[in-house]
Amino acid sequence: KVQLVESGGGSVQAGGSLRLSCAASGYTSSSNCMGWFRQAPGKEREGVATINSRSGATRYADSVKGRFTISQDNAKNTVYLQMNSLEPEDTAMYSCAAVPIGSTGYCPLAHTAYNYWGQGTQVTVSS
Image 1 (cartoon, rainbow, N blue to C red):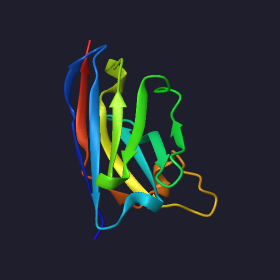
Image 2 (cartoon, rainbow, N blue to C red; image 1 turned 180 degrees about the horizontal axis):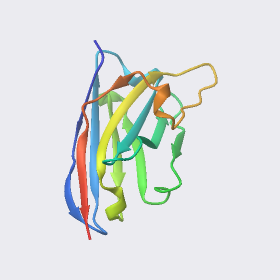
Image 3 (cartoon, rainbow, N blue to C red; image 1 turned 90 degrees about the horizontal axis):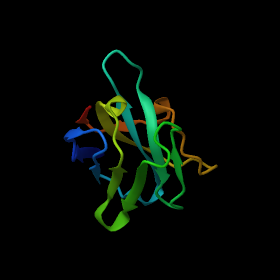
């Protein structure tokens, strides 16, 4: 059974940094799209960043470009999200997700494309 477990959330002041981790088990992450998504109260879930575990290609939402970095450690089956220059608007529940890589190798930011999900970790940024 595929399991994704997030950690690293917390409370931080605006301008601060956090690093989220997503540990995967039940399969090796070498041939999957891995993504970070977030959902704030009353808002739709949105894609933050994705990574192609085979090629390392990444995609980012415009709102986080230049501030967030997604990375992976395939030996540890772990994906990270380094978040810098955090803003109050980044406050949300952050979840990681996975889906096998398709024939195009494209890893979308649309959450509907992903079929394995973690339980989430809360990030709160105060002004």
